[in-house]
Length: 354
Picture 1 (spheres, rainbow, N blue to C red):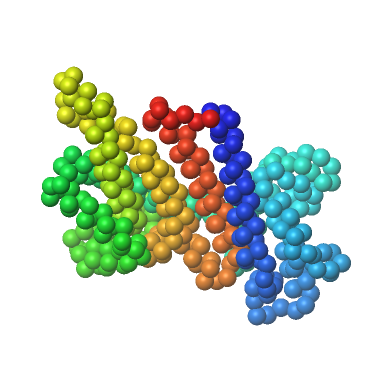
Picture 2 (cartoon, rainbow, N blue to C red):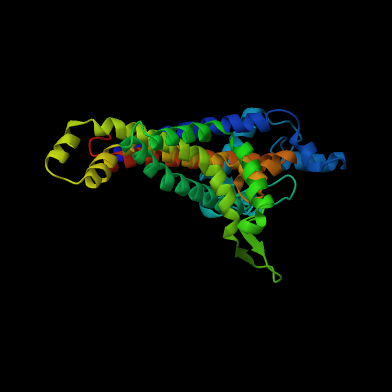
């Protein structure tokens, strides 16, 4: 098991390195970021100072090659790093550092600063991340809570109106784009029927009171969570139905019935447990995608999360925030997929990780 986890972790690091290369050269490989930071005004001295800060030129004013710029960026975002004492103080790096003028250290990744607000990108994303995790967990909870029982019911009642309704609903749920469903749900339940539902067309997971303190406003979670959970619900329903139909035809199910076990115990204890592997794949895979793909849903509902922050940053050409958001989302995706592989062996003893 330990060797398996290490191997998956190394594969994950290679994927993350590929994402870093793509993100860096996509957003900083073209043009001059210093013009975005400086805006419309500013003299040549100001632009030179900004270029030094962004590692575009060295102290002598010479242009730094792109591959060196990437190495500087990699050193900034990596938890394992080498930094000068001046860099540590200037960037306010947090971690453990040892050595002389050039120190070796373990630190919180430095994602640099926002072009627009000059705030640390790490702080911006960490403030937004709880909202996205909250939304993804709520959406997946709805999908699992409804999808698995619905899939089991469709399999047990195969070729009845219940089965046909579940399959039809799943096809509709998979086919409907999230942004389209978000607009419909927001307008219908957050505007037209607002007096009945008590919900609003938009709103974040917190509100700021008169004293400047945050307080939770969880009722705003309902509509975006339902919207985000529609597609995984549909997929989980179909996968559960398909897996259950295969399992219910197995010999050990007939043996369980022959031993006098109740239908409920056979279906839920023996049948469902052995049908859960593809469902776990869907749940973990979709959870990772929900973390990374809630952009439009968060934007439509005004939900303050990673997606809305990223879309706002794209509109303002605030590339460090966009780059940091992509890296955070990719890291979560890799970690969740490693967790999914480990869970296979826990849920189904027939699966052995090597």
